[in-house]
Image (cartoon, rainbow, N blue to C red; front, side, top):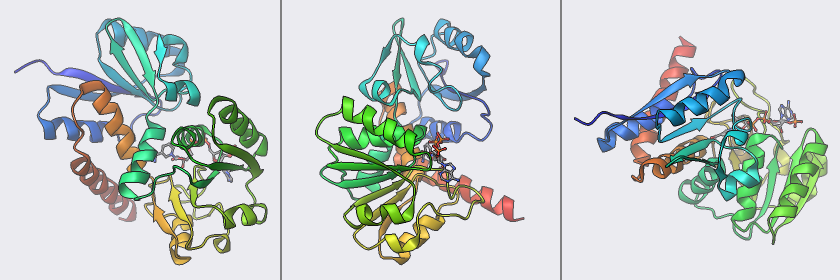
Length: 290
Ligand code: NAP
């Protein structure tokens, strides 16, 4: 049998990354000669790690916290998404050239379209948050033809900076920024179609919601990027108010699918990998309860 080719993820910490599970499930399902491994890499060692992977001819790898922005100086080319988002979560070696891509936004878009049945084109969107994930979301919604994007963040200056960056680089979309304050958002939300939570509020044991329940209604499609827990307080509130809802598992799944296809040229077995992720997350919940 052919020696397996290596794919990888670099991060710190890396032990809880779900990428090895996703990609190795896909590799096995397709019977490909690849193996996907996780490397714990400190920021000070990133340059050497990137040079080493290139010397070894490693075809592709993911980058996660804290490397997504730090890796930029070591790459020879960026895709449009990576350039606009200013961060790279996927690298591919083409000959001697390292190309940086960002699949977080396209992952969200695929989840909205395929799992949520909603296309952001022409929609009025409210994005909560202005960190790394929000940046990918806002850029991708703009590229996908959203009509309006209002960014609401606890630190309003970050929301304003993101709005001006996207307005300056992507045409045809109206951008605005506000503080993350339910009362200030009441009016814009009354005319919004799509609401996306890209803050970390509601993650893990945090039972909070970034919005009061009564600003949500059945006109909204509410997507929370969080997938642990599978149903955040925001999604529970939204469902109770009659909104359609989607959690962040699809974004995780489809960002991996986009990376995998970009490296291997093979179609990603989405449903098999989704099942593996759901089983893994359910087993983790069971362990936490016992
Ligand atoms: P980040 O860069 O650290 O940004 C965190 C964001 O949350 C900022 O906008 C921050 O506001 C806001 N925030 C944090 N604590 C808050 C609080 N107590 N009240 C109000 N706002 C608060 O993190 P990130 O990488 O963007 O990740 C954000 C979320 O997206 C996380 O839950 C992460 O798990 C999720 N995510 C999911 C996927 C997926 O594939 N499903 C991918 C990436 C991220 P300030 O600017 O004011 O600090």
